[in-house]
Image 1: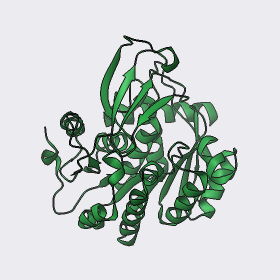
Image 2: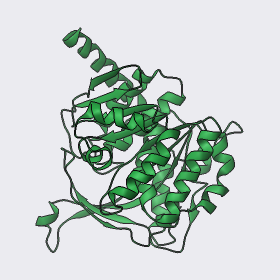
Image 3: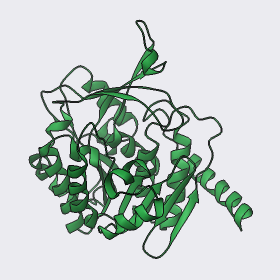
Image 4: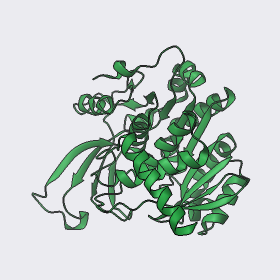
Length: 334
């Protein structure tokens, strides 16, 4: 299966995902316990690939807009993306190594990562790349991107902003996750990017307290949502721990309990899975609450696998969990 097998027709894509893809090295032990001979497995992840895979699984025609390297791992990296149903025919290449990261399994979301991404192929993303994708961006229903892509380099930041402006100007939907990473960027730079991109955003997905404390100076989910909306975001989804999500669309603010996964393995990429699924379902016609319910169900199911794309749930699985959880919630709180 190749990216061409999933290329969109003349109507364009449902979802484009702009950002970084990474080689993932998954250690079998905690990083501080790693020693000579510690077992590990290689896979492929990064917030852009995680979100793109989720959007495909949710039913959207999806393409990845990224820059990858020309090292030996680029072939299996792109093969994995295509295996997940993501169109990789628009990916650009750079004579740089691919970024990589090392992590260990954790089900609570409090994970340790070691990254190698300085000077990576992904960091070369630029306005020139975005201009080459302009026709795709104007013809797509939605774009997903993040603060990680915007923090990789000065050129990638400008590229992310231009892509957001193109999609917004063409009447498309933008989903944005600030994804603040202190090892990549300072708070002021992240806040500046957020202030510029929030007014273009249809759905801003963020975490609290982590992102909210750094970017909008509060650890309260409802207050964080209000502050993001004051910056211009139309709808804000705030993950507040593993078991609940707050949604503020300007007409009401409500908490959504997240379906319980009885057998969690690794929470890596769960937030990306939520964003990819929710965005896909929105552009495919779901009401906001239904799209969010599908997003939370998919995110919960995704933690059954190791790594960012270890388990990408089929939409039949996602829809069944969302329906069962909705029924349970109505019985419990109705």
